[in-house]
Amino acid sequence: MARRRRLDVGNRVPNLRCGCSLKPNEPTMKLPGPAGAAFAFLNDRAPSMSHESSPPVSRSTTTESPRRGEPREADPRPSASALAARVEFLEDVLRSLPVGLVVIDEATNIVLTNPLGDEIREVGDRLGRPLNDCHPARTHEAVDEVFARLRDNPPDRDHPLVVERKHRWEVHYSRISGHDGRFRGASWVAVDIRRQKELQRQVLHQERLAGLGRMAGRLAHEVKNSLNVVNGALHYLRRSARPDAAATEMVSIIDAQVGRLSQLIDHLREVTRPLEVKREPCDVKDVVAASLRDIRLQHDCVVSLESPPDLPRLRLDGVLLGRFLTNALDNAARAAGPGGAIDVVVRLETRGDGESLTLEVADNGPGFAEEVLDHLFEPFVTTRPDGTGLGLVIMREVCRLHGGDLEVTNRPEGGSRVTARLMCQ
View 1 (cartoon, rainbow, N blue to C red):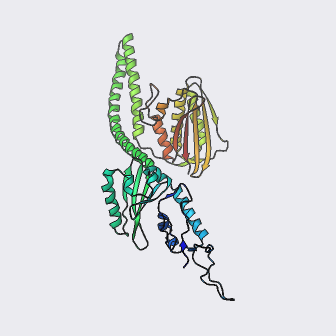
View 2 (view 1 turned 135 degrees about the vertical axis):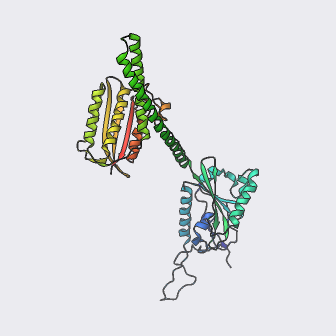
View 3 (view 1 turned 120 degrees about the horizontal axis):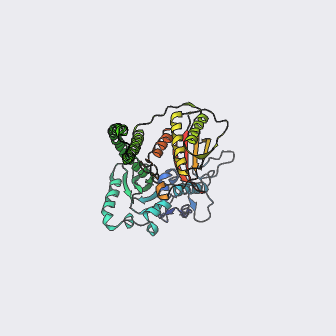
């Protein structure tokens, strides 16, 4: 009988590393590592080749030559080239996965790893060696327990083990079972959870802010009542006090401070009061024009506008849009100072997620310090002596309630730019 040899179709892609090999006299080809599990249909259909001079087996080859006039029966087994193409495709898939993958066989040897898995687990030259070689000695007992649990548990039960590694990777250990339920090994899959952790951090932060908001709302109500009493007493003093210069100055100082506290309380109540979006056809041109008219009356600044002439009516909340523009323009005017310049750009954009209104408000002021940019949306963070640090918080909420977001950046030529995106419906 002619001696058969295996067809080596693995390890062609250098970034996909496989540490298993076939026995010298194994009669049929089997894919290494997870390829055998993922493409099980290849295992028992691989063609065999003679060690001497047998040609590659093709789909049309039969075990014996048909007689003349009889139809040739097609061989259901894939050809060697088709098998190699399937393995190469599988290698490309494993190499391109956005997760780290390490595969361990039933003897606890590391048999395959993709590039990301090799980097995370630091397999290196330990490919083909026992799993414990990649773990410190103090963890060997725990690793053995994990592997025993995967081996002994029933194959029809979902039993992944999930742990966290380096505060970045969520690692899943899962059993690999054959078609007959036999234990074939285990897979180690690491998923990047940095974005998930950041979202969790943001949720916790928002929950804390919500609690603070409820407390601030009750506190603002009480402080507002006290300020009303102080303001009434101040009004009485102003009318009854003798025309003394020092007394008049003290009354003016008290009046200014009461006014500042009253403004802060009003902003606090705005932040703690939930905003509701009422979408209806809105003439954006009219809202923008009214906001620009008001800012020119209140500040000595030069305002330019770039907007499409045929801007249609859009389904937005016109009141919230006007509130956003008032805050954005007021911030820009105060940053630019007397005689400063403000550039307003209005665009209607269509992207993959739908149609949106984009508003840009830029000034030629000093801009923001880099250490401040990362904290601008935190309540009470402000760069102005008379600021409350709540305007940008409200502006971003208006954008997010419209399904968009707000971005604040420094301009390369100086000054700052506020870019808002509001989704239209």
